[in-house]
Length: 307
Figure 1 (tube, one colour):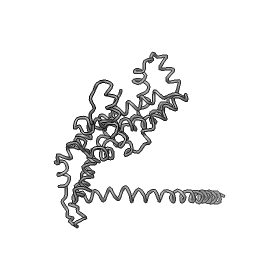
Figure 2 (figure 1 turned 60 degrees about the vertical axis):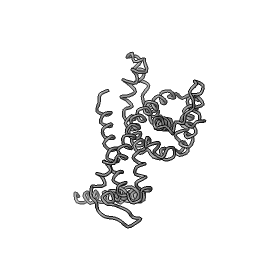
Figure 3 (figure 1 turned 90 degrees about the vertical axis):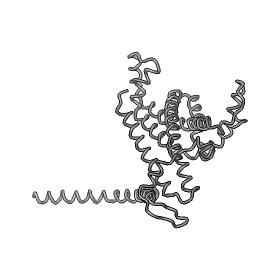
Figure 4 (figure 1 turned 180 degrees about the vertical axis):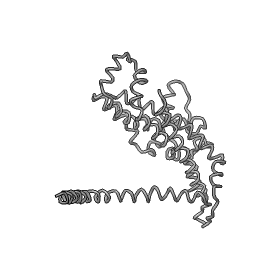
């Protein structure tokens, strides 16, 4: 009798396994194309780039030989790369900070279900869906001698100035453009976070005397939306450190390298100064390490610090 029960259980287990097999097979079939795509276009290029970073790599003249870590040493000693790194760190500190607070302010301002709020949110979000190249071309006119900025300043008696040809104002102008275009994108993240806060929590905060906006931000919004802030800061930091297309279209790294950034350095070493592809690969990995360190650091600061 016991043996029959054991056999029946064994048969039932086998039937369950056979029922799972079609689902597992279907899942594997759907995952395989994605895995092939990731391996071919992500893992293989990364590994290949790391390998060629150890070589003097000039495929155009078939001049390839092993140099070890000398490319990395040359990159970190190159004044052009150091200048680009300083520029992008300043850019990241300014843009990520302002766009994070501005995105949160947008989310608070439009955190209602009214029709006016929905229309205003859609209007504010328009710059986020316009391509960076198109937005860069628009802002070339905005900051030109006859552009919108000089037109508005003329009402205050300020003479026209071509902001993008100034070593002092070119980079702040690009910072302003990117804050204007990226803050609406991160507004959506904060809007989703605000919608997830229970109304009971806000009512309890009012009863406890947290009536001012600053106190509600300090004791309610920020603690409950910490993970939204982590996401916004990480995405903002990664995007800022990889700044390229706006710089390439608007200033090409000038004037006098005042807007020069690491991806411009990597681009020039790959496509302009022919024969430095190994050096460009080494620079890309140096940039990757810096982004990784900054991401881990800010994540620990936001999650572990008691605000």
